[in-house]
Amino acid sequence: MAHIITGKDELLAAWAAKQIPYVGSGENFGPCRAIGVATGPEPGDRLLAVIVYHDFHEDYGHCQISGAAADPRWASRATLRGVLAIPFYQFSCNLVWTATPHTAERVIRFNQAIGFTREAVLRDRFGKGNHAVICRMTAKDYDRHYWQESRKAA
Image (cartoon, rainbow, N blue to C red; front, side, top):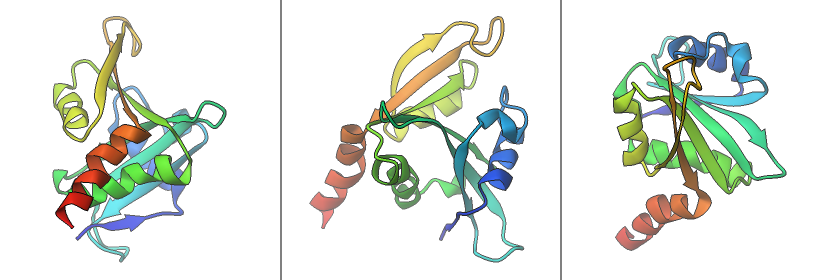
């Protein structure tokens, strides 16, 4: 079972930034919150993934989410529900979005599989010839995808 790590925003964001092309150092996220998903609570346990919540605009109710994974086993339905609940319930966002290089087709498919909708392509966003695929999820999408199904099963 996955263990969630909180309270280490700078350290976790720096780790994620090193894993994500076009981000660089942790400072490039600017003000952010980050959570880690690990194999357990002990210092020797393995970090499986980090999710960074950044570019938060309280007045407009949205933020960007970026993630990096060392192991795909972090992404259980229960962990995804919890990771995505943070911007919608803790930050009161109505919309979250991702920006993924167009060449990262596997990541784009993953985003869509977990409930994000492909919305736009921003040309040259990551430099000449490197386009950003923008995906979004609204609070309504999140509730429909992660909570209504679990209510039916109960």
